[in-house]
Length: 248
Image 1 (cartoon, helix red, strand yellow):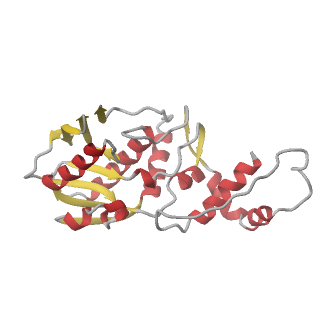
Image 2: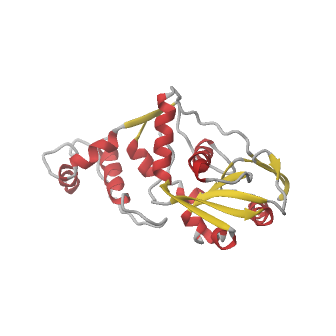
Image 3: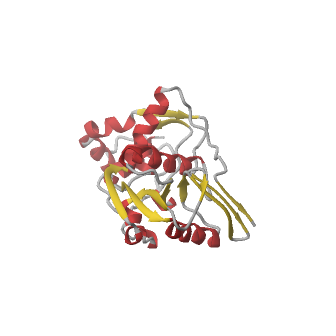
């Protein structure tokens, strides 16, 4: 337990300044036998002592979960939660009546949320990047290109506000905001600046009619959402809702 805690604390400290989706880390083996608890002062002990005041807030419990909350394709409890947080957060920044969906990448979700107490450092571990939430206005034709690309690969990113059915790599159903996708209509895509600016080979910003940058970091939005859920007595459950269905 002590080793795990030290690793998480160190990882969280260094990830606070992460701005991209690429990072490096290193580790070493520690023998968990009678020689472990000694009077030796390890380098990590000095680091923890020096940063104890900053580390303490990371131990705060935000919410509880019935089991481990996982992220997996084509949709899952954790990926759905993040996508829904995007929709919720961007609501006040949208001034049109276009149907709205959300999109973020699985690569930005770096770990699952643990069973039991979910602490602030778990949020930093899961969302270590300072990616901020943006809203892009796209034509239905451009949105369809994105969804069809996912369908052809049978590999979807985290989506919100949609109901999608794929059969043998063909897009059979696509509802956005509860209505069928139409090429000649306009849509809002709530996403992150990483994808807007070309990350993971997306061209969302390049094809957008208009872009609104909220300046809200996705990690902070998730933290706020979990606090509100906890205050209302919600306990997280590891269950998707079937918003994306793929038939082979």
